[in-house]
Image (cartoon, rainbow, N blue to C red; front, side, top):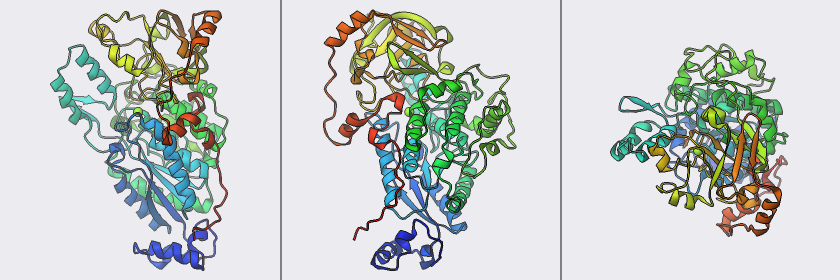
Length: 572
Ligand code: FES
Ligand code: MG
């Protein structure tokens, strides 16, 4: 046995009955004696699942990681955790992000491993895994699924999500046949991998790169590109070294790393979901990150010309140079704060040698796709704890607006009425949707980008102001005000809005104001009661009882923070 004491030695290095048990049962898989000689045991935490098509390529990638771990003298052991298929789960995968994080955390803690490779990709899998790993704080590194190949149909490119919303409006406007709509399905999703727009999955992978949680170029290499396997192999090698260096998430996830991520999110036109995920991750590592910090990225221009804010897709972004180019543009402006990475050195290394091969896909800082693309935080009597809007995906003329509210009390009411020919709305109306926050839906579903009422779609209207306590898909677009906090179900003022009330929005001044006087609101509040909870048992009840509001990352209150104490007791 080797002499260096590792965490795994408390499992595989013991010379007693417990050591016998830990080793012997593992040997039933044909692992030789030297796998247990004290070398680093590397957990490969896999969210592979056929029900998470975005992560369906992760079994292959796990094999590539293992090759790298063996090569570096480690012992790789792959284990499954709950997988969250964004497009397949009801009521919303977000309800289960925190459950995945618990699965990841407890799996890492309970097993005799020294370091972890996190294999994820689909929207909630990346943040859920990082949250869990951060709460144990063993050396950890991310390998992402990578994006699907660009969608192709009838001679045009089709972007995951983004074009679904567009096609669906075109069908409702009578501009696209249902037959074409159905046919486009197969052309859109042509390989395993995550949505190939800059949706939440590619956003979170890009932010992992900006935070130095993965090797450079991890975000954009297509899922089926052979270079992704090579990257997975190199990641397997690197995690073994990280264990020797004791390089942990808490060394990497500093306040500076989060600020770099916020600026990178603006530069790539990233998902609004990055807000709740970064806040939740920060809560686990104990970094004091608040909505206010997102204003730090406000003036960063849009550089990546990718859907939904621009026109290209992730394959194009990769071939143009990917995240290294974005990071080098930020570094050139002094916007990349010093921060440690999984390579041990500074994040600036991730921009080294970056070359842009297509300036239409990745713009230079001084010739951006759009100026000042960062998320705007809005506050006011309608959102005392904040709300957000993504200007790069919004219509400029609606970012400063005052209009009359039309209120849907819940998602069912919206679905039943949005296509009514006599719906009393105009393009200036502000659509309000209640009851879609963390506790209310529950799980804060991606329904904030409400469909435009059919009668307006037929008149050619494609955007309106929409306000809710929901989230929206990272692939969605429009002047959509999201994450209103506190949510309806938690007694937030959103629950008091009535059809006909006037609402003022100013993205420039960060305002979301309900123009109803305080006395009237107090009367309405006295009459207000919350809906009965939609679940009364099981995990969903635990979630409803303990979930924090969106401005705090929608984590469960008892999961905030970490526990790095060794586990001492044995099972037998
Ligand atoms: Fe999985 Fe978009 S649905 S990444
Ligand atoms: Mg999504």
